[in-house]
Amino acid sequence: MNRVVITGLGVVSSVGQSTQDYWDSLIAGRSGFAPPTLGTTAQATGKLVGEVKGFEPAAHFESSQLPLIDRVSQFAVVAARQAVSQSGLALRDELAERTAAIIGTGSGGHTTIDESFHRLYAAGAARLHPLTIPKAMMSAPASQVSMYCGVKGPVFSVSSACASATHAIGQAFHMVRSGSVTCAVTGGAEASLTFGAMKGWEAMRIMSPDTCRPFSKDRKGMLIGEGAAIVVLETLDHARSRGADILAEIAGFGMSADSKDLTAPDVNGMTRAISAALADAALPPDMIDYVNAHGTGTTANDHAETVALHQSFGVLARQLAVSSTKSVIGHTLGAAGALELVAAIMAIRDGVVPPTMNYLGADPECDLDYVPNEARHKSVRAILNNSFAFGGLNAVLAARQFVG
Amino acid sequence: MASAAEDILEMITGRISPTSDALQLSEPLDKLGLDSMQVVELIFDIEEKFDINLPVNANMDIESKTVGDLIQAVDQLVAAKAKPN
Image (spheres, rainbow over the protein chains, first blue to last red):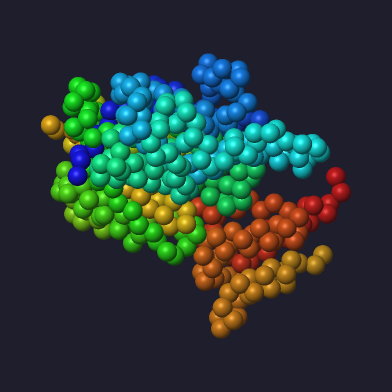
């Protein structure tokens, strides 16, 4: 079994279009929430969104390429290029064939679907663009990353709603650990701030009318965001052989399914995934200094996640620093696990825990240390990154400071 | 004006166990034996039937509202819709 290390990070987010800008915003608590401006979304429900503003496709792609690539794939490719560039990997020849690209997305090319079907049903269009299907397909972000980054090994997408990116990274981790590939470009992307999707979210009545305040008293629900994050994984031996800068080590991965309910969270399913990640990582629980929580800001998730952390960590739960990145960028759905893993890796790197913003005070049902409203200097030896999706699909990654 | 009560009570009893006791107007929505998404579906059906928008957030409103509150809110929205501008 190989040890698996991270050598590159890339981010496109509502609070920064590079890892450093994103991280600086998280630490400063600079919110990505604003009224929507994208296409038809602007007429939606009056809810704030975590939209990636100022993203200029023409700065990243040739004009001849743009008709072929949906916004979600653009995010994935831009983040992947950053991550590969930071890693210093030269993806060619045999190494390209020994590299995987596994990308999570909850909705794929949702913008293309929404705009195309609107043209057809509402505007009475007689025909659609010939690349509607390959732009919209769920695997398009993975295919585009493979083409733009020169990845020629196993390439596919993973879709498990709000856990998509975490499942994708976990799958890539398994493949690098087992030796079936040497490197992996992996993470998640989402760009589904369409009118249709926003009306769907509104219909669930779990959207906050003001802001997202995970684990706080008087929390009123979630807000939706978009973006992408990609990480480069490789075997420790390979990273060492080329003198790469090792950012952190992926230590373990745990998965479970609630097998219970399409929307309601289940404490036992969450607990099993957390415990599986800890066991897989062979980390003593007292080494986990930070948990990047799923923390959606709904009454149900935040309470269930708190109980699951109590069940998994026992008396040690109260020593954990727990925070939710969704308080700054919203729920980025299929990208969330990757954006949140980047936050947790940066916490290890910098010894700073990002805060849970918009926190108004303690809810008796949520009684852990949520690092309210202000970043905290703290040595972070190891982290957990929780993702708990609709449909009861749970995925938890464990990562640790790299010690040679 | 007719109250929406009969329709709403029918929609609720159609969703809950037939063995449950007679429905009380004072019954909180979260004590009906429906999970929160079933309550959200109930609200959707009411909105569709009466062509109104009920401002209900599953995170805040369900546990503080009773069946009677819901009927009253629907009656008021239906009345407001019928009133000429």
